Length: 460
Image (cartoon, rainbow, N blue to C red; front, side):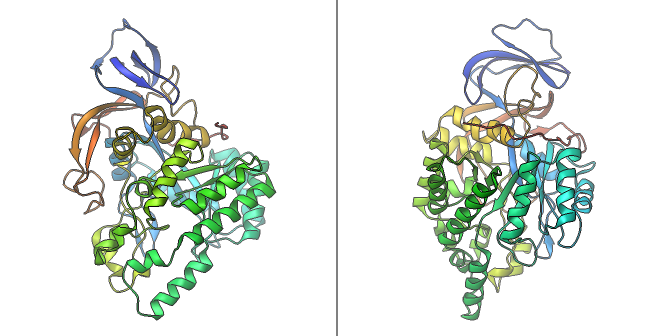
């Protein structure tokens, strides 16, 4: 179908102007004033913002963890993302230690097949690196369009690789034009603190937070950055939470090193006081944990300084009965919280509306930078002729309240229950088709496409 969007305020990472937009055959065909096209559908966007569909590069859908699975699968998760204005997600494939990357890919393809409504891609988490896996890394880049490889510096015995494996992986990935991402926390320090607190009978969710002090993230981030410098590999730190880790990035700039950094809404919007609420605090048990107010300030500054490049979610929801697995021991609480639907509206409301970031910066960190860093630009992440027609029509003035009663994520609570936001996603196009309109999803499961990715585009 063809769609003509009239009189919208079009916003890209570096542009902001009023114009019309004509969409045909899944892509943007024309941008201009007073476009005279016949269209199957006309949308009057007067007084509305029109920006590229969000890209959330950090989600966990139907993910095995601690004996259970995250509660959103590819159908419910990508549908909820669309309701919030996110049209593409990148999920994490987890290699089983001792098994192949190919088998892991097959498992995740089965998870997404016939279910995804939004578009999607994969990162490959390498949890067991050796010579055979090194060959598979090259295959993933050259044959499958999977160009980013996740590593863990924590979760020993399940996901963690050691520094020697990390360096060897970086060398292979760098040679073939890929990207290494990292969960940067010092797993050995954290494990020892968890054991100490458990031995002392300190088992409430508060001790999840106290088992992962800022130094565990700052040290691991600095170590990862040094390994990147040594190997020349392009790197990306996921879910950065704290000033100490950000200062490691600042120090790297003194030697002209460049790397990419992601944070998440929860680390910008709430502080560690969420752990003062008994077992209700389990809603905020995630790794790394929520930090302090000074860390929020550092991260907002980092966004404006260009040190923090992306806002993802680390969406990894668990229902309350799953969280209750750890009612007697914080270390058994599944880590993660639901956020995929709220990212765009929360960051607009708390960032743009409150003057912490510009509208252009908002588009940059929620859409354009993820597209560039993860090899999808200019197809994704911008309003431009020839790009996929992933488009959000957004009312910047609508106030509404976030609640489990109205969200579309497959989880029985909202971490942001009662949070009033200003700005609401009204209409969403995914590759030119109306995905969300009048509070309804109009696309079917299985209509989302896997997006094979290319090399990273450098960003300033």
